Amino acid sequence: MDLDFAFFHMSDHSRPGLASQFFLNRLPPVLFAPRIETLLRLQNPGWRGCNLYLPIGMDNWHYLKPERQEWITRRSAAILQQDCGLESMAVDRRLLGSLQSPAGIQCYYGHSFITALALVLTEEALRRHAIEKIIVLGETPAFASFLEQLQQYDLPVSIQTTCPGRYEVMTHRFLYTKGLAFSNSLIRPENWQSGDLILAFSEEHYRMVMSSPGCFCIALHNEQHHLAPDLEAILTQAQLPPCLHTLAPILETCLLREAGFIQKSGELLDNSNLSNPSLYSEAEGGMSDRQQNQADFMEIKRLGDELDLWDAFLDKESSGLYNT
Image (cartoon, rainbow, N blue to C red; front, side, top):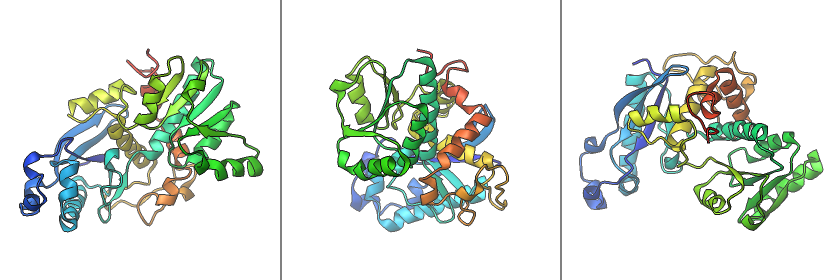
């Protein structure tokens, strides 16, 4: 199959009959082996992919012995490389920290895509609303770089968290080395008001915002949906959850492959299309952890601009986030 991406996910529900660790680890692993379930196509710009499905839930997964988990990851790698011709896969964001990357396979969870999308939606909000202050709830990878990008809008930026001390060193460094000032405080919904733009990166933080009407909120947590209805409809047709934990990894993988540095099996890496090729690791067929957590969200944003991908999120297609 000539595919652009594969999306790895587990069942949303653990199988009760497999709940016993004793029983689960004595079944032939082929009974719950990963398999390709559905082919899907993102119409614009025409990316084709599949979902690689593991028919057990997270609770079942944690019951498996390490050697059985390793067998599943090896089997997943074989399917990707031999059947799909891929050396990378998008992974359900809810599996972060639970799944070990298969040998020879680069896994993408959508971190950089979400950070880039946050900037895109912030810029659109500033064009459409009288925003006077930006409040950031939660954290993204490359958080310092993301905050630095927010300063370009010449608005006060407030970091609000349950543990302000965690960011004291960072905010002091910004102030004394770059002259950039951020407020850093406990979360204070009682002080939020009209004119505040709130960026919420977790569902817990989003629930706080919902109890404070009058603020404009951009929610980018795993379960968020109705961000890009046309794209989400394609996921629904493929019986995939139409949420950010699915969409972000898929689109990040597609964008990075479009840039030319996520290669298919047997292909050579081509960095010629990248504005900053040094951000990427050729030896690993993708970004290192350090690189993925630094500046590449700006590359994702640039690629999305070039491909008009952000139109799906900006009410420039049949539906979008700002169509309310």
